Amino acid sequence: MFGLLLQRSRFCFFCVTRDFIEQRKPEGVLGVIAALVIGTLGYHVVFGAFLPEPGVGRLPPDAHVGPLSWVLALAATLFGIGMALSGSCISAHLYRLGEGALASLAALLGALIGFAFGFLSWNSLYLLSIQEAPVVWLPDWQGYGVSLLLQLGLLGAIAYWLLRYMQAAEAKPVPRSLVQLLFGQRWPTWVGGVLIGALATLAYLRVGPLGVTAELGSLSRTAADSFGLLPARMEGLDSFAGCATRVKETLLSNNGLFVLGLVAASWASALVAGDFKPYRPEAKELLRNLLGGVLLGLGSMLALGCTVGTLLSGVMAGALSGWLFGLFCLLGIFLGLWLRKSWP
Figure 1 (cartoon, one colour):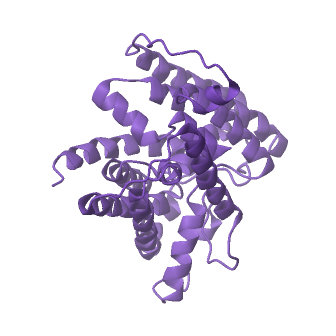
Figure 2 (figure 1 turned 30 degrees about the vertical axis):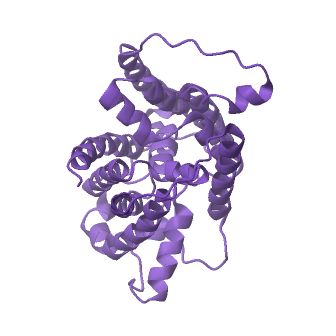
């Protein structure tokens, strides 16, 4: 379902942000806001099943609530630069792979390398900053009601500001069948956002929060460990929730199956919609995607997730770390777009 929704609504954090920065088109960013609003409502309802009283010093199980530190800000900035250089976030590279974007393979390979760099630097950064960094979960502060009002108020204010840039929508032909409705023109991003917010709530209730980097990180960690590159102990890493990585003992984890399902659904959707268009990338595009992918992986590892896990699932959960990641990710996108203009 996630792969289908990503592909049909072009739900890519970088793409919609770039559209607004360069063309002043807010529709895509409003789609992300819609996902966050629906997910925030859903998460806060679900939380009551796990923690009826939030102010007891405990966190909801598996929720993407991370530490606030300069390491998170740096990781988000690197991730934003990586998105701009490679042209997508990690989840979008996965769904674009289903559309035949072979250059995304270079970005995903780079992400594996970037994860390894992150593991190598983790112990030093953890002992320097992350270990003592505060973990702020908004419901623990003043309860679910205040957390919900704060988040919806801020999201509403951002949406109101974005609506100033809305332009009259072009008339589109009316779909003549269900297949044409589903696989004709791309869906408005807000439709995908609403459905992704609902899916994120259902996924958290039944399985776990949405995230796409745990399997990639585990593959990288297992490979680095097998070559003897990692220290015997990764300080505090396995105590964090979110997109947790482990040295692999099975062929595929739940997250690995989730990622495979994402790519397969995107491919099937693109095939039916006529969006499956493989092309051979040039060497300079492969190099740029590889470098961008390294930054994506490094940023994801140090931030304990990407735009799906740390940002989307984190903000829905009321984690201040999600908001901080989003803010510095935006800074990274600005820097990355500037760097991309000077790319040879």
